[in-house]
Length: 506
Image (tube, rainbow, N blue to C red):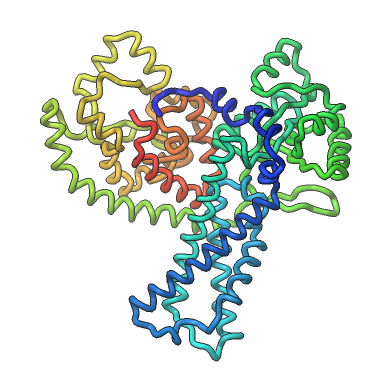
């Protein structure tokens, strides 16, 4: 990927109306979009992953530890553990709209379900199967492989589902309902996460006090056809074949009678309704419904959970920083010779960034630009203007031949592991910024500086250099609002994939 894309084209790609694809599709293909079908597919995949993990662990323990078959687990044990795992996954909402779950939440829920399942198996072994022999080696090996296989199968389904979505399958047709401001915010949030799920066939706008000119501009910016007035929403449901209403509307001080009527009527028509709120999208809170008052109660994560995740993050930084520093020391002689042969300049470059206190800090990188890179930039007004707008240049003439190779595979970043080991930066976090980039964040700057910058982050794995700077700001804010150790883990996995494919690098 080497072309720049603004947020508007991405919204068009993700939330584009394409009624010809689904309307002409056979009934059995439209059936694929039904939630029960998704749940059945995920259930079969989970049972396959758990069973395969047991078989692999069984053979591995038998051959590696020379444990006899009679000492591994009770006879026909699978008749017990297969339904047990399915029940635990169901309790953890493993089959509740899996296509709408963010990837890091998939990692977290899978881990919790597998952990609870094996804890339950251990307890049952002491109660129900206490007279039987059960290998501890098998239990540990099975626990590790079960999580790996379960995650692999589930993410495999997600990848297949995304490919099928691109060709018009696995789509639920949806109508957007609400104010143009709320709907734009909803589209932008999905575009940031590259979410593909619904096929949006149109929008029903609720007036929000904008002028006629502003309202016309808002309609054009939605990138979906405006179907008509809200009062005819039932007719539009029938005409478009949609079975989901996505409502994005601010709190109505005059009362929300229309919304209450819509919810009651949707229940009668068996139509799903989703309520979007820009406030809730950034809250990252747990919630439950107060059925007496009909209200939502929100709860922050327990302090011990946040503390534990931060400790795990720092521990991971120390381990990765130590390992990466050793690799960097071994690569430096080779890369150093190549840099010296290229132009004879220094091997390292001290890259400046803004620390949490607003002052400059520095971290090392292998030098990829000419020694006189700043002078070359200042001598070319057009190049300088393009750099000030994006702080990156496509096909930058200042990059050396060796530097292009180093950048393509992110090898220039390896000396940064020294800074990770010291604790100056983290492995995962928002991208570092310079003093010149501070105005780009405006009022969001204190929020950005409240966390350590990272060697990799949400921005890099969701577009890398192909994103606009405004989108980069939104991606950084999304990471800060939704941080968890699971999101970091997902970003690390995606980073490896992006680097191997040299995606979006220049």
